[in-house]
Length: 331
Ligand code: UT7
Image 1: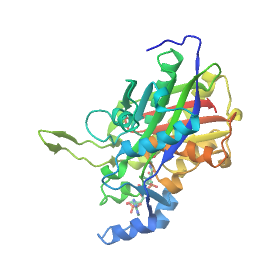
Image 2: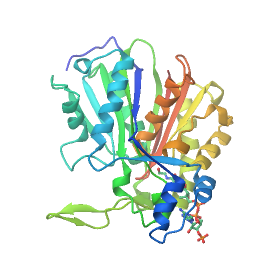
Image 3: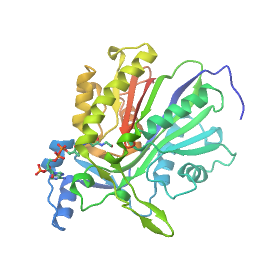
Image 4: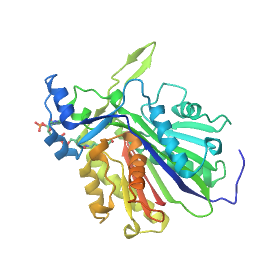
């Protein structure tokens, strides 16, 4: 790859997102589950999570399809063509296939044929934060100039719809950004962490071997354990990334947390002394879309005119692994 030593920063040049057409409300889900003798309600789901609806993809719509739609929007808003992209990173835990990576499938579907690097990142719900941090680092050292950074998921594929403690929480979708080299930031600081000791509180432990599924291929979660860890690490990574950038809570215009549960977001905002009207919330309409949730929320807020050029954004992810991290951005 070409080296661009004079370019020291990366900047979000454009955003995009995609949702499957089918919107499923809590009432729809409760009725479908009741027909199988499983009890849940709109009241329980809204009260415990803030979720009112989510989107589910049909079998023929894969993570790569949602990623392509989101990428096309992001490219358009950045005013770039696929030919100008020299790095594609897809964060996903629901890839199209075991291999090749969803990123190479996206590259092919976008018609990008000049041989740019493409790879997947697996950090579950923190995946987009990991992917954005990697793309930022690659741009800063000069190995990439324009990166497509995507979070895309079809979590409905790994939900056990007989398990009411998990199946009401997740949804499908994608979000993408174009990250471009710039002589001013851009991304101000990044902060990534993982602690594999907690891997069993949120996992999909099955795999495929000898032509059959080995182990359980459905998502499992100890919700309360995840909740407690999430609130603590989201506060600590926020403070770390602010310190790295020499900024304070007062500088944050918008907090864009991983969209898992409104109560976790409220707890994080409280600790950072941010009013909820500075928090971008889409969990009510999308549910938890894992690696897609942050770029999806970012794009919704940009397109609605709430987030404007010059705003300072704190993006924060937390999820299976356990993984967590944040990115501070001058948009
Ligand atoms: O993206 C990765 C990050 N994931 C998360 O951030 C998830 C974090 N955890 C959570 O969001 C919450 O822990 C949950 C929303 C998963 C659960 O909320 P909770 O307030 O911790 O509820 P709970 O697990 O303590 O369950 C309370 C009750 C239980 O009944 P009993 O034992 O008190 O009789 C559950 O069986 O609610 C019951 N319950 C339900 N009831 C109706 C659990 N799921 C449901 C349901 N509908 N869907």
